[in-house]
Image (cartoon, rainbow, N blue to C red):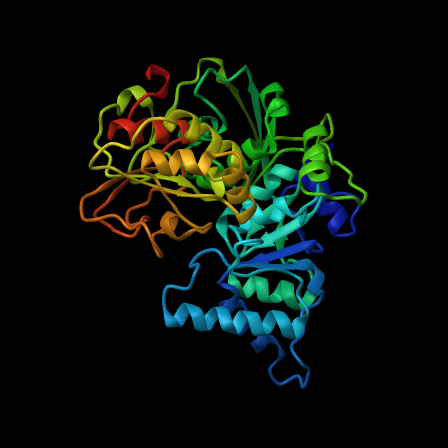
Length: 428
């Protein structure tokens, strides 16, 4: 029996000739990522060394990445003190993949990792964030872990007691209609699978549509794979993967893509034809409560949010700017834009997108996660409704449990900003 991509990656990382679903392995980790929750990991990590007489040192500082992104700049003395603690730990351990609160190298962790070429095809990547699934877009097995598990990784360089997951094969064909794209695809898929439909499984994406899709789009679909319960999403490495890493991330070393065997076993195959797909909307308060846009037209929107690790890249901002150029955000509606990284922000400035968005009435913010999870900037008022390009719409997600969050693509968000109600961009 052949192996899926993840089975191959885990076999290689565990020093085994093969793996199969249900095997428990301890793969070597190629990259371990944390954001501000590194403060919690540090506490657990230091406990590992208590009573040993050994100085707490990470196993390989070159394989750790720490990015400040959830509360930037610090919104409270507590956050500032935790960030100070992490800075001291980073300096003491010689961690070089560190992205502080800066306007030149800052950004959201799931943008920074691909942007700087930290993730390669075939890597095992762990992160103390559920949307670590994003990095499967580059052909890596990438998944989220807790602080205790990460402390173990920092100490040993391996992920302990990892059960080899089953894989669902997702075959995507067809050409996206105008104003429809990767975000609509993943929302539609989550709606079909449900929030638990891929529990403890991997979504492995294939098909002509995926082969034509940019890395930006692949990041979006892998990012939200976790919303169907998936351990990870993965796009097997191909020419686009290599192009992105060489041309955009500046990687110069050896890169090898891992493909599934022709006789690999999949627990399920899901086929999607995007040719007739309409813009999709995830309605409150679950991501799998997905409807075609025609079912939710006209709903009043108080706040529009464009950005995040899901849809804050340059192409996302370009699409939004193209719709808003020369127009105005509706009175009674506020619009927030937060680019995924400082690099993206700078590129959008150079191309005039930021000017277009601000002239339309948008408030452009520094790169960060605050508005998405509602801990820093952009909270909703009581009973208010947000339309957002982010990845979650749980009750209280945008800072107020009485608020309502709808999820959509950047073009739907931009079109709706002009009218102040959920609007189909195909009809504007």
